[in-house]
Length: 84
Image (cartoon, rainbow, N blue to C red; front, side):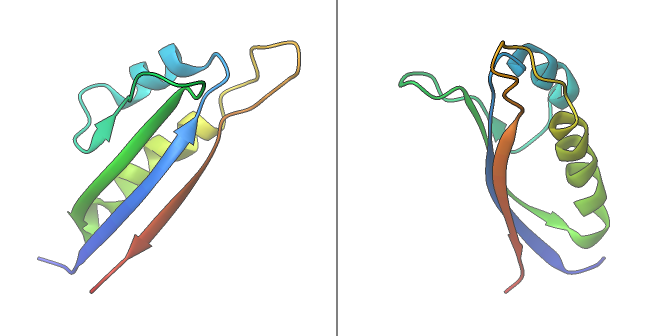
């Protein structure tokens, strides 16, 4: 079955959110909070060890999205995986 891995984190977008939503699809654990000046996606979920790569693949695809604004801002964020 594998160990439980707890993953917490967020990504901040600068125009890339529609493409990130497409990549995430109906992915469990993701939410897109509204309000404020940030345009984030937050993730909080416990997954089995063998599922970690699925989450990591989504994060990698989103992090690779090109800049869409004149300042050339890329997606940024922070994730923390841990076990008990």
